[in-house]
Length: 327
Image (cartoon, rainbow, N blue to C red; front, side, top):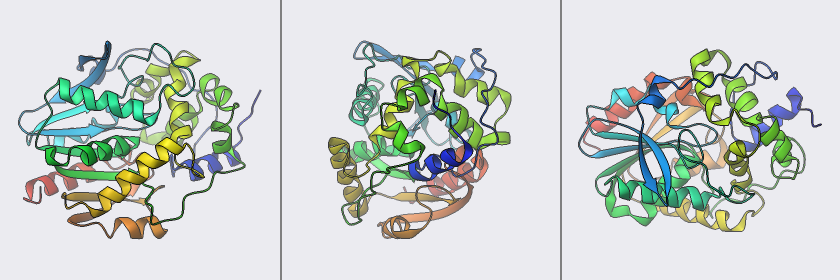
């Protein structure tokens, strides 16, 4: 059996950009299957014969909140109330995550970035989100949102982003790591690490956030992945989709394409810089992002899952930006 010590976990966090805060413990926590009040309020829509879940509140122009790995729409629960009077706030669960159905065939490669992207694109069409869209995006939700904006720029009013997945052609590609937990995720050993030991939920998300999460919060994040095995497949596929060393080639092409497009776009942007953060905190990528057109930058305290640490700061910044006339 694989063992995961603190040093390996720290390496994985740094390489994957999955959390800047260190886990408080590496022991498994008690799992609770009770649905939260947030989950009970979700709506569902059929996409390709499967139910996709989403939280919705408010009316008017759509404001779409997209989560990444291994979270769900629950990530945005404390931010949406700041702006729900300004528009139709929609927070989907990605396919196979949160309360959205799992894919019927979840073998390796099923939950590719392009698959998640296509399900969200079709979902937004199905619920009538086709014009004057503001995107609020994080982690792999940024990849989906930026792909949407690249494909439908005429539909998008503005983009607020934090800890985004970017890989522009102007910067050297990040190499494939040869050691550490991240290399395990991208190897056959990843099945044991994630599908059996639930590493992304227990150690990177819950362990990394520690006391920022209540027991109810922890239970809600655990709930979709209580059963070991294929229910956890999306949380393993996402680190395998990160552009590293030119792989996977199809995803690298997609991420590079939307990154270059975003840099040249005139669409209004709110860059929420996270300090100390994990992905866009210092160095060439930060310099790249700060060169974007038509952009306001704000800084908030936190690690990668900043919505759980500084939701009020993010909510106020988003409210100010949306109310300022910039969008």
